Image (cartoon, rainbow, N blue to C red; front, side):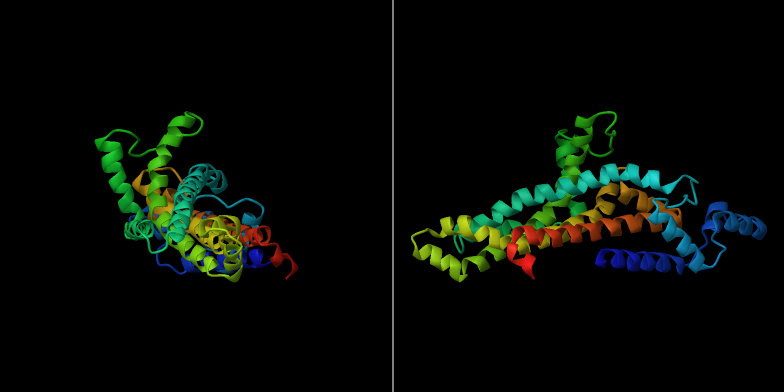
Length: 305
């Protein structure tokens, strides 16, 4: 119920915010030389001359059945366009969060297990550097050196899964790394803090009193208890990566959902902007729902509450 209510509120916010923005899609399509009669005719064809409440209810009812309407500019159905773009955006976001977690979790545990030692200091310095690098700047650096100077990976573009799976994977590597740099650095610091907090708990002291070393107590008893805050951050980061693809897809010229959103904004294609934003919002809410469900799997004590 919370998921559905949140999605409804999000759809209302998306629709009404865009509805009050200045500018007329019909005027944008026809140009400045269009007559008032032709503008009024196109407004009627697009359905934007109707009351806003009617437009919203029609859009939401269509979205609930999987029909997001027709683009104002291209006159193509929106649902197939979004479905096609998701084939780029979803793998990109998943690859980014996987890379971030694969590096950050071991690095955070390593730093916590060597608290105030050289290893901890080195990880802290590197993570701070990673946080200070914007994703788009990391993308530009990777493109300049890895793609252009060294010629190891494509600098941009996407051949398509149907044409070549290996080439498609290669085209997503640099964008995924660009997304993972900042998120991995942030996650490293959270993992380190979560593990350090767990290491101060009484059950860890008991395990050490029974003869376990600090690291053995951490690996046997600490990591599972530190997982809940880490999973929470992972969920938030995956949501941030879905939003972050808007920038990265434009840097690497990827035909994903983010690039389509930017193009729709430039074309004043409001219905496409609304639908794309709603899909991204629904994905973020779905990620939060999965994170909440994961809590019960990680900590059985939460099932009885």
